[in-house]
Amino acid sequence: MSPATLDASQFINGCVDDRTCFARDLISCLDKDGFVKLRNHGIPSQDIKEMFSWHMQFFDLSTEAKMSCAHVGGPRPVRGFNSGSQQKSSKLYPGNEGLLDAKDALESLYIGPIHDIKYPNQWIAEELLPTFRHHLETYYTTFQKTANILLEAIELGLDLPAGSMLSRALSDLSELRLNHYSSISKHELCNENTRRNWPHTDFCILSLLVQDGEGGLEFEDRRNPGTFIPVTSEDPSDLIVHVADILQRWTNGVLKAGLHRVSVPRQFQVDGTEADCMIPDRYSLVFFYRPGEDKSAGPICDFVTEERPACYDEISALEHLERRNRLVY
Image 1 (cartoon, one colour):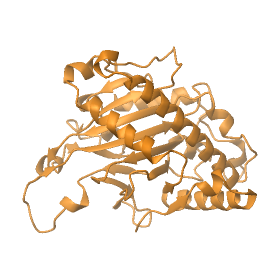
Image 2 (cartoon, one colour; image 1 turned 180 degrees about the vertical axis):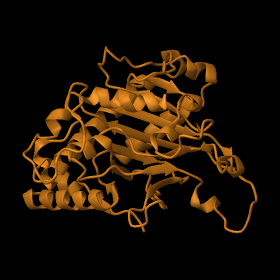
Image 3 (cartoon, rainbow, N blue to C red; image 1 turned 60 degrees about the horizontal axis):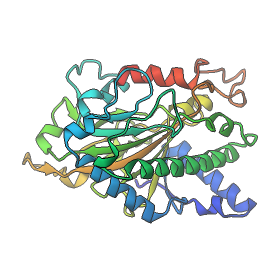
Image 4 (cartoon, rainbow, N blue to C red; image 1 turned 90 degrees about the horizontal axis):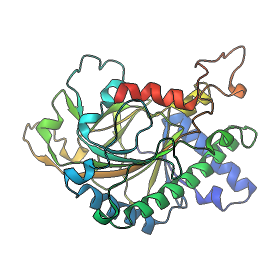
C-alpha cells in the first residue's frame, strides 16, 4: 500500500469548490491512514534544498560545538541540541516498559517560537555557522504558515465553524526539529534495544515532515494492525503530514494519531541472509505544530455528544506536552 498524494494547490489557490474538494479528500486520507503526502504545498523546493544544506552543516560540527546549545532536559518544551542518549521514544508506546536499556540512534536540534522568552531557543555561537539562526527562524515561520493553512482545510473538511481549531493554534508552542540518524550497522539496529526511532505517535496537532531519500520511515498499516509500511519521498519536496495526539484529542478520537517509526530501510531488509552492512546516514526535518500553551488540549464540544462522551481529560496544551515529555526525557 502506498500513501495517498494530494495537490495542496487545490486548496491554496483554488475556488470554493476546489477548496472543499481538497478538504474532503484530506480528511478522508487522515481518517483512513493517519497520514498523507502533499505536493505543491507552498514551501518552495529550493527552500527545502537549502534547509537540508544547513541541516547537514550543523550536524557536521564537533560534538563540543553542538553541546554548546544542548537541551537541559526535563518536561519543559525542548530547545536546542538533543543527543540520542537524552531521548527515550520507546517509553511512548505501551508494551516497551521492560526495555530498560532501549535507546534512540539519532541526534536532533529543536527550535521553538522565535520570540519565546519563557522557553528561549538555544543557539550555537554565530561564528560557528554564520546566518544559521536567521535561516532556521525563517524556516520555522514558513512551516507555521503552511500548518495554519492545513488546519484551516481540516476545519472545512470536518464541517466546523471557521477558526474552531485555528484560534487555538495562532499563539503557538510549535517546534521545528532537525534529525540526523548517523550511519549504523544493520546488526546493531536490529538488536532488541536499539532503534532509530521506536513506534510512537507525536504529541502535537499535526506533524509536517520532509526527508532525504534514504528511507526508513514507516507508518502502521491500519488494515493490518502491528504491521508497518514504508513511506518514501520520490521528490525531496514531498511533505508528509500526519495526525498527532492533540488533533485526536480535539476530535474526541474521530481522527486518530498516526503510529510511526524509523526502522531499517526496506532495501537493506534482505530475506534469508544475516549479512551485516552499514545503514547510511539519514536526515529529516519535522515541524511539530502545537497550540498555544494555555489553549485547551481537550475535546472540542462539536465532537462530544451523549452517544460519544468525552474520551480525554480537559488539560492545557502545555500540560499535555509536559506529560509526554516526562516519559521521553
